[in-house]
Length: 308
Image 1 (cartoon, rainbow, N blue to C red):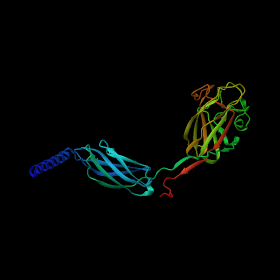
Image 2 (cartoon, rainbow, N blue to C red):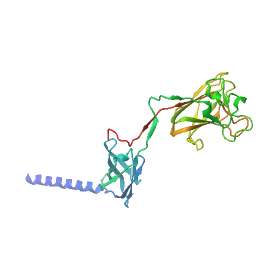
Image 3 (cartoon, one colour):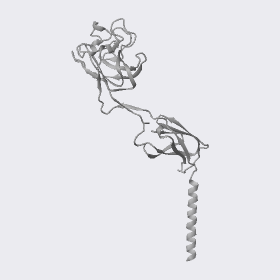
């Protein structure tokens, strides 16, 4: 009886050893990575490395402590790439410590590499305040100029834009000589603004063909050098005889503060686009023009915070 027991134990032991060896034989040791470097980005870090040949790892596991969320993060990079972007980092936190480790297709771990890297400064965030409490900007005729104006020959000229009378209007020149550039209105503001909203009223009389449907907005701080901000499209209601309609654009967040604005209609109700330098067809008209200063909120992600 003892002999049988001994043989059984020996066979089980041999089987266990055999299976363990078989499992080890199926594991594939991953190749390694080398020459780890980093590049500072705007609120991000890009880790790069080289692959040792022959390459047989499946992915690189990158682990680090996120100082912003205060969590340990794990990101995986495929064997088909040699870099990994680490987002939402901050320069103010100094060096981030990373561990990089290749794994094979059998999920066998390779060598662990430790690497430190710093982030570039995160961009300042500018957006509208939640209250969106805009302030009207008082416009006067002396603040506005035009490169094409019929004056009182057809309408009331620039004063017709600011007199709050829907029956008066501004009309750019429709007869010769026609300005060689797109007809526009230029406004010199009394203070620099970054958030703006534009509202205008359409001509009371006529068939509505001159109603502005699309307008390019530009900004400047010297009245000479201009930066295109946006091209806004407006929804025009059907024209009703002897009626002026209020057209309101969405708030505009400009790339920086400007003291000059240029408004260039590029499409009107009966011409899209408006041709340039063409007698009888390069014009637009408008009854009233209104500007609103939109309050903005500026956030610097690199500023010290209570959570740091």
